[in-house]
Length: 289
Image (cartoon, rainbow, N blue to C red; front, side, top):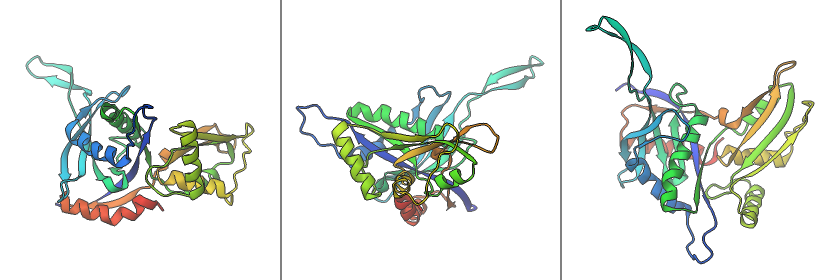
């Protein structure tokens, strides 16, 4: 088989624990949920995300030498109506024909990460994130009622400033941060989120800055904003900027649309090849750029 270079986007899975009943002494570990998730992928192979006009379908599973799930293909099943010629009736008719275009997904379980093939003709990343969250939460909550799954792309830490520098007017910058459960980000952000999660039982912390005239000033030397962007860059949240070109209309740019693409060469789609790929991109998955 000819080698093909494909672009992938890394999605971080965060496991958020809601309060346990007051009488419970159980302390749930994220690793327990991640173990359970790999079973969901292989057993719950067809799912319709709420509000979406398609089904997610899973197949072509690959496993490591130790039996861990390491890759699968994820399809988008739908039934478009297409015109066909009916020779027996000598007429044209519209018929629904099932199709399932798919992408390759690499499951890096130790890093709580899924590398998904970037192919916007099959899935836009923002829609894929929403669909996978809906799928995982639907099945995870059957076993772990006090767990919430969040998925965010691992992005370039520079994309926020590249966005800000690209537009003459900045009207607002909003940030959403997910409490930590896996990666080590900036210490002050991690400690703050740990403290407020404990005190307020939050799933997400949001805050923003606004200037209605479009003159919002954001300082690249501000360590607070730099640390926030580093946290988000590792899949710990997202940002949104409302901006415009000179004299142009306002629109919103999100970190979910500014994902960093990782080029990966796939030849045979074998367990050995996938294990090698996971090892070679491990640093990028853990630390971004």
